[in-house]
Image 1: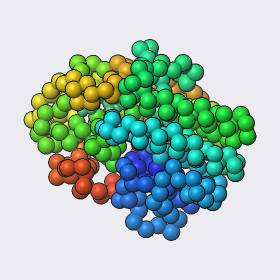
Image 2: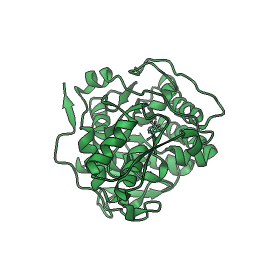
Image 3: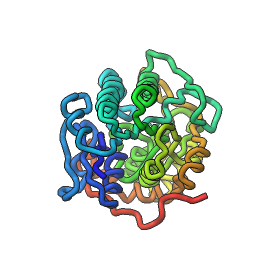
Length: 342
Ligand code: UDP
């Protein structure tokens, strides 16, 4: 198989590439390195080609899609810090990029996996979130609403192509995904807490810390996506994540404890750090019934072991500041099974 991974140098994309290469596939990565890093990928590999370019560039996208049997479309602007700083760019990348990739794939009938987000559920109170649940649209002027609408629009477009041209599309709604290569600079909570704890600085918990999330290890997420493809589950949308719910306050305490850190926990208003972004849901938990039924397994790595791995990562080191300019060593592959079977 020859596959194209857009955003393949990013945090999730590079794990996917690693897994595809390990299984003998030929991989082309298209990445503009806006948030991805060349160092996330093997320096040289006979079956890997890295193209530096944008999913907004029609000619490049058409050429590369024309060379492959499958597309994984992961390129996106993500993270409260990145998207909050450049909301227009975020909207354009996340809509027009998906538009270009799907148009090229449809013209050639290349089966395409579209990475969507739990943000499409919006500000729901009722958990768990099921794939058939209605979107809960937010306030349009808030950046978070734009992000969720862009991801939802990408899903709509994927299924529109499927309806009109029969393009095989598979939409994966990724919930909070974490792992050692994730960068603190884009605002995601676990790498931020890990770095703060290791530096002995206060951990900044937004709001009252009773909001919840479920954190899945990136390699479990990649295994689940690949299992869906291997079982030919095109034509559908699947939640992919962990169902182990934790409050952000508990997460902070757990990071401090496991790091053996003297850090205190500080509370701050989310709005004061990210004005105009819009706060997230109080609870976010996926219903994984569809995933379990499709592949017989779900991401299951424990939060404790994930935190330990993130704490050991060079990315978490205080020496890696500012902006993760150091700490680019690639983590070792895990030796344990990634998914829990039914
Ligand atoms: N959060 C926090 N401190 C931080 C970063 C995030 O308390 O330094 C909170 C944030 O308000 C949210 C949760 O942690 O409730 C997860 O945030 P993240 O940005 O990682 O993901 P998302 O909000 O998209 O779930």
